[in-house]
Image 1: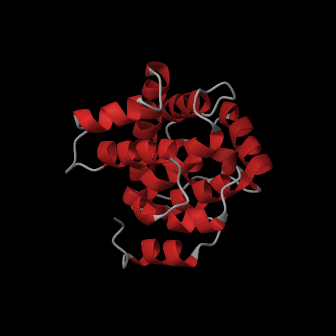
Image 2: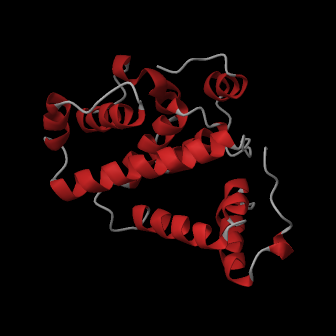
Image 3: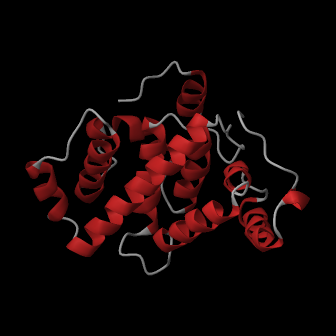
Length: 194
């Protein structure tokens, strides 16, 4: 990592419940949380936004949210994000076969039409050399109402921020899952993700 976290005791008392919750949920404190926590107000804003996007009453079902976060993480070459988000996607019901097929989702029969529309949209929003076309927007709107579309866009934007933050600071995976065909190639930079 390019910036090291502080010892837990050095963080303000009001951040410690977040770290306790991470330990309860993931079995360990997440390195990115410790990095964001170096600037407590920034951490609080990011945590609040994440909480809104992951709320139970989100119009986007949890498996779809995780599918999008994994794909955006792959595009942004963030091994930590692929690690934690793929593990979450698997817990939310996706098979490892589907997760491994994600970089080549266009050629796979494992994704339904709604997932395909969301993935195409996520890629267009994430890649700086692409644009959201009217045709793509029409396809996305055939699967998502306006409120869901705003939430989907917010999720994609948040995951771009998160994965770019972690990638820039070289945050390593923490061992939540092991998908050799994806994780190793992302870590050593040999696979160019489509």
